[in-house]
Length: 156
Image (tube, rainbow, N blue to C red; front, side, top):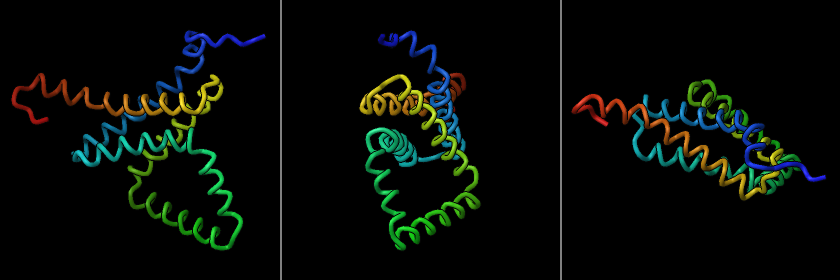
């Protein structure tokens, strides 16, 4: 017997992780607004969102192979130790930014697991995760646009 994969069934069971993904990226966008991030920062954030979706869907076999290759030599262990040490320094020196990235990774993985449960192919999951992340970043502009519409002459 084939399981029921209608849209309403998928939405009923996976809406929470997808909502968390959108809200996490909207919150990150609010952080970017608070820091008065320039256009380059927004473009890099959008590219990071797309790359993250690629990494956990289409690029996962290649990334997994690269990680496993790192455990097969002393050089690999050395590079991983340096990477972990660098991440520890970044976590301490840029705690808020690091916390946002950890949050984005966690909700992206949660949404990816729900996409796997829903039976989405990797390409569909990539498009879906990218679209939800970009939607979250776009929604973070809503308060800024509303504020500038209600206050005449307010800067963007």
